[in-house]
Length: 134
Image 1: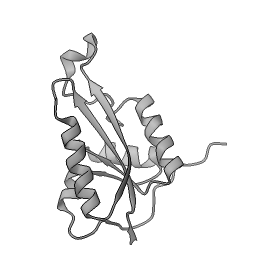
Image 2: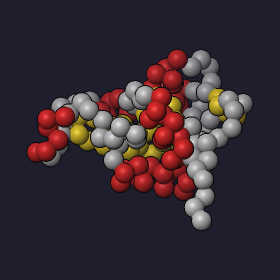
Image 3: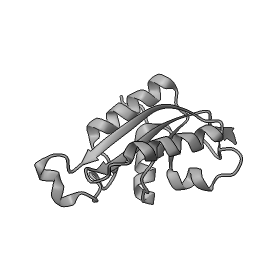
């Protein structure tokens, strides 16, 4: 088991949600209490444009929850800062969690995982590494 030392936070919020910074702050405080340093926050907004208002609560991607551009930003930050884990404020399906773990090359947790954890946050098993392109 490997201890988690660093993380980035990711959240998808509809335009109607006004307390998204408070949700990020609470999650960062919880991680800090567990000894995890947050290296960055990534916010994907939904319904800010005219076209997105109809589907405010739906994920932007069935596979990754967020759009590909935001996902690329998160992946770059994970590599640059050598992040151990990505923590989503949102709930994720098993399919999304697995797809994100493979794409980002590291485990993906949710707020619920962090809230349930006890005194520390550790990872069991091996890290998810993205296959190299040839």
